[in-house]
Length: 81
Picture (cartoon, one colour):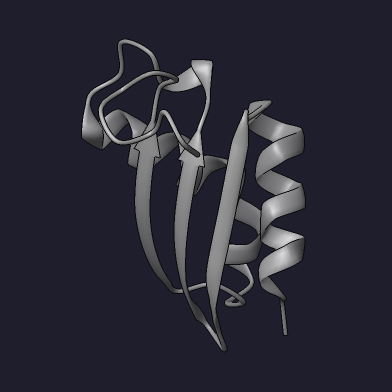
């Protein structure tokens, strides 16, 4: 079973995020991610970027519930993250 810290490490490595927090357990997780990679992306594109970075975990069934909150740096509400 995958741990939130493993998901954080994977996202950090694949997306070069400024900050990432993952909560959850079992197969359902919530991701809050901040990174320049999300600048200029729509919400759907951001969701897809996170899902793509976690494709191996999703494909093998370790992650099947994923709530994503992804922001570019300095977007409203991310200044303190």
